[in-house]
Image (cartoon, rainbow over all chains, first blue to last red; front, side, top):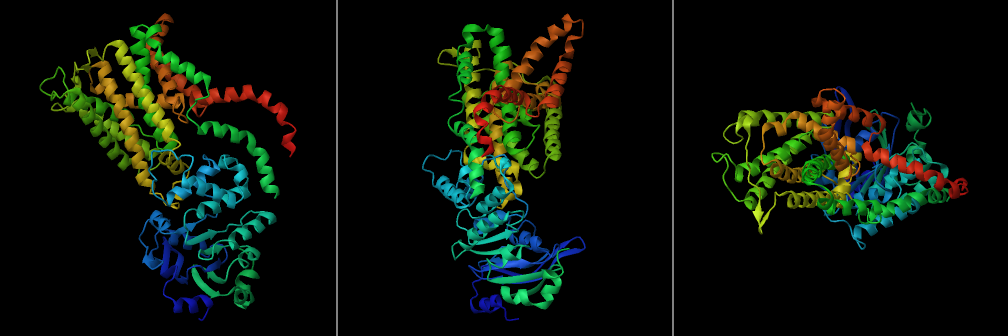
Length: 260
Length: 361
């Protein structure tokens, strides 16, 4: 009971994300049961667990895609449990999706521009952005940061899988993110692309914390400082990567047992 | 970085096409200039019948269908109530303005009655939209169709405001600066100006944050919410804009026929607007106008054509229906889709030659 995360959250009350007893039922099925978790600002954490452990449901509850059946979620001290997703996003929460959720009919540049526009004023503006539009520049910089400048005027439907995954990350980094949820960002990436992903994650500014769901231990454990193991919708274990890796129960459940 | 290298090669042709699209609409397209000039000098080449019955009617119907194209093409929302909104606007012009039914019309001058009609019709469409955005796909179609059908039966049965099935006749049209604006040539230019304004507004909006966000909502509403957009508010705002466009067309419609009756807002007429938009193509704002031209030409001349073949002239809808079937069968984005594919097939042999070497990079 004295994991790094818990010790740190006991010191400072200013948690980035604080879940208390979050439960989510789908009919009779409990996808999440009594999940309590505290993540401090700037903390980087992995959520591990086999398929069906409730990892993505956890993300959906945090962003408001689904409301939790019970429990509370606080984001930087504010109770956001009943906020619609866009209110949470405007407060600095971001997420990526396991299966790319992009705008295939629009260009790469427009995808990123929308992400920048979504977290600033003028979402309903009838005026086209001009030559010196600050958000256009912000979008350009983001496109460059994820190595997509060469295809920025291409429609997203025409991009390769790896490029779509990179765009997925760019959309989550628009504006001034304070906390990001990455849902299997390495899924389907080549080894080269994985290296690029690790570089992007480790070069994020220190104040941006994140939770990453990742099946690839090589990626996950290299970019986080703490780990939460989930099993059957419950938090099973928390600790630093070394503790989790060497924990016999975890090995039994996940590392040794393989994926179901 | 092999990934970026490959992408750069593939990107080149698309980049140039997109760059051109980013500047003002079709400014480098000679065909667009030719069409613009022909439309402007139309009164010199066409007689009064063609000017009003063909071209003004096309532009009015095209503007109504444009409001549907904006919702369906950019927002992914198929609304069957666009004609109802136009009809409501037309009724309001007749009710607030001057008409032969003095017991109903309030007798306001046109410059008061028209803004009132536009405001009320936009509010009506926005409310209908606020109901419709709670649903998706076929349910949106059903709700908007229900609103259209309800309005049709209401106008039929309400005598206090809508004057029942006889409707409101001899609606006054504007006269000012010594011009009768319903005379053929001035009216043609009024219609052309309004249609052009709506066309360019839609074209311009498609690249403005509001329009881009609407296309984002069409492609992936859930992700739009996860980017900070209030998806329902955006959809309702799109209905408001589209309703205003439809309301403008409604004002022109009542000035054109000088009367409005339930027959003009029937369910069949609502579906005609959908057919016009789909036949023309809902991916670009020019589509609805092409669809409207085809519709009006068929409506006007198919009768003579059928009679000449020894068939019942009233079967012109059969031709429209067959044309509709043929177009949705061969091209999901209407006539402009067919045209674009033909253009691409013309261009491809030329483009392939120099591009062959690069393909292997």
